[in-house]
Amino acid sequence: MKAFLKATLLALLFGSCLQAQEKKTINILSVNDMHASIEHFPKLAYIVDSIRQTDPELLVFSAGDNRTGNPLNDRYEDPSYPMTALMNAVGFNGSAIGNHEFDATVTGFRSQSNQSNFKYICANIDPNDTLKINVQPFKFFERNGVRIGVLGIIQRGTNGLPDTHPNNIKGIKFYPEEETIAKYKWMREQCDILILLTHCGFEADVEFAKKFPYFDLIIGGHSHTKLDKPEIHNGVLITQTENKLKYLSHTQIEVENHKVMNKTTHLVPVKKFNKSVPEIQAMVDKFSDNKELQRPVVTIDEDLTTFNELGYLLCDGLQKMTDADIAIQNFGGIRYGEFPKGTMTVNDLLRLDPFGNEAVMYELTGEELKSLLIDCRLHDEDRSPVISGAKYEITIDKKNPQKVKGLKLFQENGKPFDMKKRYKVVVNSYIASICDFPHEKDEKSLFKVCSDLLMEYLENQKHVNYKGKDTVKEIFR
Image (cartoon, rainbow, N blue to C red; front, side, top):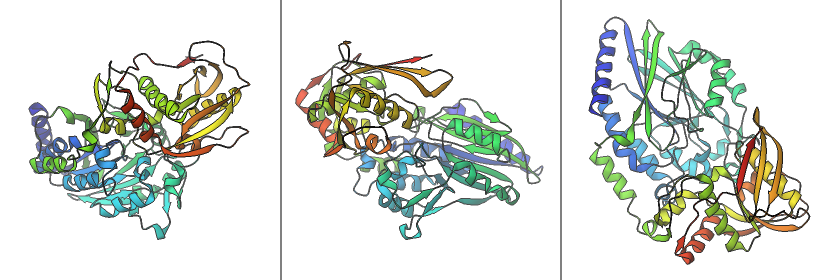
């Protein structure tokens, strides 16, 4: 880590020498999808402070999804206040809006956006003025005589809304991403450096670069992509740093006579630093003082190493606690993919399922169940849902992952599945809200939170073993 800081400081010194020759270097640090990883903020603060000592004009941005994933933050009395306080203390200059910013509903996001010392930047959102959300479409920064413009964009799913429960964003309109970006081409003439700050995913960012080559830099998030090396598409530099503050991106842009002459970026491994800022550590310690979240729930007998194993754990508890025949969990709702054998605490469980969704019960025939599984995959970014009480084999077009060629259902023991029988199928309320598939009987809310049901189930088990539990087989053909 000393070698990194030495290299960084040398680069900054080199940049200051260039300024004497009419060249100016703009330093930008960026992160994305932090998902409330407050435990890494003391190290993040040390890196930011080290660079800021040499370059007080440093800019720091987040590409969204600052919250959701840590109960210490998400279940705080004022939901997500710890992340807001820490981002303020570190000195962030701006953030995109991520889809998970709304997980505490509009009210929760309004509270945090209005407490932030930085601006949330998003152009394709139209919050009703009466909601009083502190968001602006773009922002200009002046650094050492260089003008930097930042335009923000949030992703929309197949339903035209960001990937959160639709009830969380009532009263807000969202507009098409590319159509919105095109309206702000005028910004190019108003600044020396133009940045697109997105929460749309790496593939979408590449498409933006192809269609809008007048941006100098795209700082992206949402897909949790780790870009180890500089990615330049159509002349546009794209950066993204995986998730949960494992890394940050350090971008340097050289400007001469108001024109960008050179730009580069590299990842910095935040978690590997062994130094931190004591004041920020004290804040984290205070936010982490929650004995209830440290309470043991169950013992995991063998290491769990896949999302499907952990997803099956979620499904199994939900199925048994609701007396359902089958339970389904959307893949995107499984928030981590490995867990070591040993004690699972309340905090661990709520990190695995942090959304507070309620259980919803369907009565479905085998054919209706097939339609639900396919529709859930389509609306969950082409990721196949996990299931308990049954298993399935899904055939996907290898050239077009959005196209499902076929799906076969089986009993969990591999025996044939009765396609005409009706089954009690339990899902979370997010699945019920995003899926639109043909079914004869209306679903019913059980008015019970899925994570509460799972906690009750696991507390009664004492020991569980889900190693090797995988009821989904994907075939690409």
